[in-house]
Image (cartoon, rainbow, N blue to C red):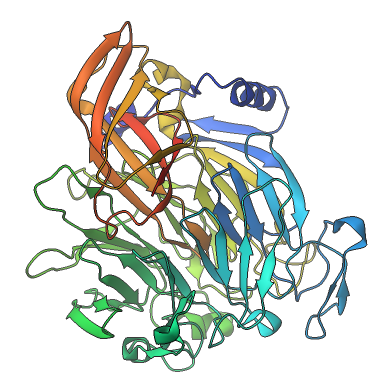
Length: 558
């Protein structure tokens, strides 16, 4: 096994080698000289980016201008970041009735700086997704925010705008997903066994019942909040709640298929929080196969026991299912560690990163224990039993209300962790965490710079059409293996409570490989023609060579 892990590492490392962008290069050089703590080993590297951004990053979304919008909640006291210009939020339902501190920020990835933003209602445990024009549309929350719709446009001076009654039902712990026609569907939430759409038309000015959410609701516990939702190539939605899933036609409000329950029967959704991804869709195949991977969670009864001070070991299993099979079945796998409140991120090369969380207890106020500091790399295409690789640990526990997202340069931005009902920095097991870190997966290791592609064209941001043939030019310093070059596009996710909404990675393959000069190459790919496969919007395009991704470029599929 030790030899095999070394082989995995040798095929999953690469250089920190950025595009010839002066700004990015200077930024990276400054970080190297900054004196901020760096930990590194064979399995990835950690760097502290900010000791404090003033808020606990409970929700995160990367936007097309390489800025990340983050926010926590407005009803648990003042943050450590003041609002500018004497601005104050007045909310009679909040702990502080007049709060002049920020509960949202915009983080500039390239400059490693941040600025305060002002949300006008409580965004606690809300949800969201990005519209086709790049605007973040964010919904729900608690008390004053439970029926709000908020928008944030990607510009350097923009701030939050809010629509007071944009929703028909209170949405707290709901899940959002972009649809092929550009609308969002908002599914579930606490005591909401239904869904609705935004924006609304005359035909959708109502709630649509979804009995599946009631069927998966455990009395007094739930275990079906923040359901895992993925848009399928056939236009239906895969919806997972608790320990089972359906294929759902939201246009006709009917269940198309019911999948078997996960064999162990254990819950995977909030508060027994695991996570899930739809594995990369390979679009150069004759037909598109769809697989879903669900990992972590907490055994039945864990939430009740944790509230009594008994913290049960988290689940150590993942379950993988090929939902396009005629008779799909879950295949169980074993992780290196038990894990609850785990985030799962699709990496540009198609592998999955498991990060954050604990190994005992559940989600909820002070209900998690035993932080898991090591990320785990899941090698999607490896044989069963050889897919997990332990990574280098952080030193900062990331428990309840932690977040993680993939950045365009291939790093993973990590923040948050506040299992306390207020901002609390002393006298608690896990203090409120205001820092930001970056985890660099092993594909960014400098010793493999000769394998790392650098995209020359198209120029970012590029605008492409559905079904368009696209030529992608790139350089590679070392010898290139043409059969191991592919192009992937990633839809950046809205991350909160261990689930990345709207996350999808499309493997476009490559064809017509050409040598264009010394160390210069070109491949041709086809942008998906189906809105079900690739809804219109902004994606990050990568060239991947022997599992080593380039820095990405922004592409808008219109």
